[in-house]
Length: 116
Length: 113
Image (cartoon, rainbow over all chains, first blue to last red):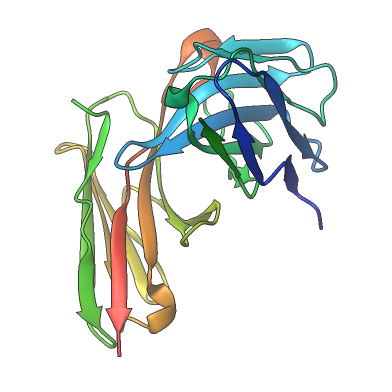
């Protein structure tokens, strides 16, 4: 079972370069999100999407763009990489996050990004 | 102040020990509560939900105190395989009628022989 697939697993970028982190899920989940995890900080929400064509900002959106053209895919774009974006990035999906409902969040394996 | 706070640990315990982790959250409108487990260099995975009346799953017991905004996880008879970081997670209202998951920074557990 594929679940949530993230690519690449590792990436080194130079300051100012751009790149796209890919995320795909095969569970027909409505809700997808991107987090970054830094030591001592916990996972912080970057952007999220509640369905195809609908995205919104999370807690730390600056420097990142997202789009959701299909239910399955939710790529994260780094526009101009900075050393402060060195982190581990996780994509997650769940069936729904509307109020009153709960479903488990499934995570991809993560992307370890270093910006030099 | 962080929305979800946990003691980072590490908690170093021998096999067979009982260990408890605590977590506090700041948003009284939070609706649901969870413990996730994260192994070293891996993704988080759901360990268990936390219900108001308290709940058990094998060796794991979770408790919620809404009045004190406090969540706990108790692990009995610790195994080497329990070594991991335990993330306290709270679902809170967000914009547009949706919710967000807020993650604590995690508590690291190391179980030794």
